[in-house]
Image (cartoon, rainbow, N blue to C red; front, top):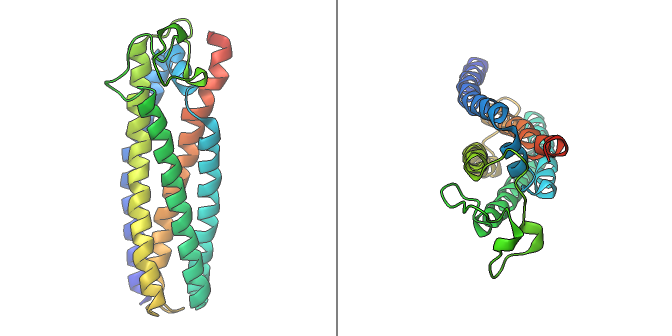
Length: 227
């Protein structure tokens, strides 16, 4: 049984290394284009809702804690506590996805979906249309172009969309683990699936810890120097 646990853990770490390389390519693309078009990236970043992004960050931090407690309780043979922690982690994961869906909906309403950006809107208030609101207007800072702003949103949706996909997979895994825990499949001697899934969940949370400052915060720092 111990050999199976070690083999499963090693397999998960190998998988996570491939995931690091995958997300590393996205982070590299972000770094290169942000260096080339700092003004456009500052403009686009300032249109993101930092409050929703911050709430999602807190949600994921708490979900890492509940996931760790789920692993601990499973190792200790506390089935009821393990199920509660798994359910809490699922709820927090769904809350994250729900908040992200609200953000995506806002971007859709503001025509900030790649391929739908319209020159002059939402960047200039004088091109307002019915349903527009003042807080959705955003002036292009000097040196920025709509095309380069659109590039930011290509990267934004690629990175956050891929992260959301990993979250959906994680929630599905936790759902299966919860059913297995409820049926008494885990014990102090056999808890590898929960432990291995915990590694995956923590990895997904860590990715967001990097995404949040890069996408939501750095633009606010640059805008004062580029405006």
